Image (cartoon, rainbow, N blue to C red):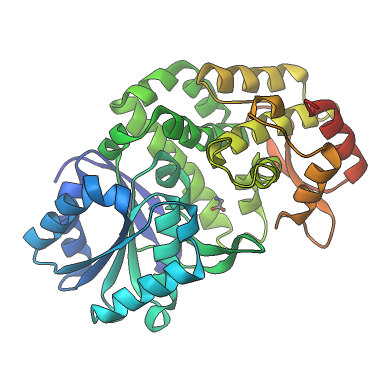
Length: 371
Ligand code: GLY
């Protein structure tokens, strides 16, 4: 087997390893058989990912003696629905998998969240393996056990914490991503530096081109991101405290996604996070918590990689500041009406700010709004 980088998620009896490197799809059969022994599997994926990666994965599994049933769902956010969940559950049960067998999620965040949720509820909990195929999924959603679906009332409102038993992040599959999708995932990489790893952020400022080009810098950045996330998850698996730090940029970002009706042509999640992180730093400056130099530094880096940083960068018209504040209030990070934000004292010094005055947020949104 190749020399993939290994990162451990220290969760006691639910601890697991993340492997990061090239050729992990080809090696998946051998690695899965070594960990689980004699099992059967279902591979949940979407139509787009299946075209590129399903056959190599199935043949790797077959080569290791693992019989696997493919479950191919439509690509896109709509798949995080009760209907698709039912389809996935039915397919796994139809393949006669038992609790000790495994569900493999081969895809981006949508597939990982849905397949993980299905695995968590089938037969009261099947084991599952994450094989993330987008940068965003490799550095964020495949690690930490959040699974779930959307409902008409909002995103990720129904789900479970259900940790995977193994994560195989094949960095070679990222070569097929569009530049836009890669950049959007990169926003989450930068986020870890901004939360509490200032040296990592400085390293990204120097090395980001290498990450986009592939090779050692890419593997290093994904591994460091996974280490950062694993540390937080090991401290606070169920998001009762520190895990909320991972939402840096997300409160503003989610509001902007909602304000654009989740129209991916206008704004994808990582772009919302990039704008949200820039806003969180500017808002922290406005609240006299951080220096304007830090906010300028963050914005300069996000701009250098080609990410948006301003509300005005979103194409088309947006609802006004009051409506944006309503979206912020509806975000699940609002605890009993109080506005909770992840703010910062500077690069790598993020903290959870509870009871942020809505009037300050509204004044800031008015200043930041292009209309
Ligand atoms: N993506 C945020 C978390 O996993 O907590």
